[in-house]
Amino acid sequence: MLLAAAGLAGCGQGQKGKAQVWVTRDRGATLLDEGRVPAGLTALQGLDRLTPVETGYGGAFVSKIDGVASSRLHQRDWFFFVNGYEADRGAASYRLRDGDVEWWDYRSWRGSERAPVVVGAFPEPFLHGYDGKRRAAAVRFGPGLGTEARALARVVRAGSVAAIGKPVAAAANLLVVTAGRPGMTARLRGGERAGDPVRFVVSGRAFAREIARNPTLVRQRYQATGWSPS
Image (cartoon, rainbow, N blue to C red; front, side):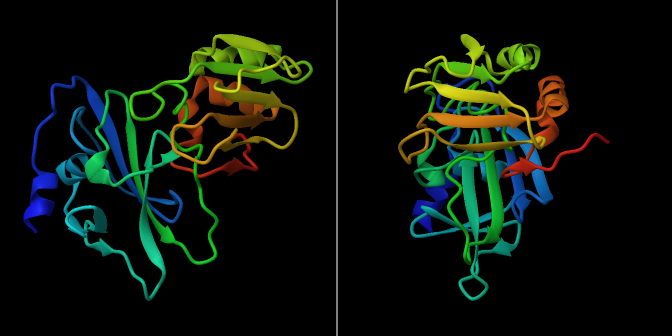
């Protein structure tokens, strides 16, 4: 308990700015809480600023948020993302930076595949990366989609915009704009750890235009498919 309390106490460690904290359930289907907290806190401290938290294993494991508890019987747990990446460490060990998006989602792990990166914090991780390390970004586009690609390049601050086929540095984050069923998906380009390069695919001309105008269209979603204008 003393260790847990130590993890929940503390101040901003000299960091300036704010981070966002989201608490949802069922892959973002239901928003439970959200707010902004000072940068420099650990993710655990930031969460505790927003809502009641209970921990186990000396503060390393979040077992309950706002009264909603992990359940081995029902095979449900809290999953923790930063800037769209599934975190690779405990919340007491991740230090929030200005602009970070800390996201806790309560869902079943029964039969679930891992979600190493999700679209719901877009335009993260393009803007702030992970653990304070931002990667260069590139945008590639299919035939006739140059206008949409350039608009999205401004959103993700890409230094390279070109037609599909032009090589992309292996260490860069990549956003691909294609025709097809409207939506957005995300995966790691290579590797398997938080912070590794990502590949986001935005499909459908109308959706690409909409997401460039309003990146929050995919907010708090693991993947976005089958989008249609409202």
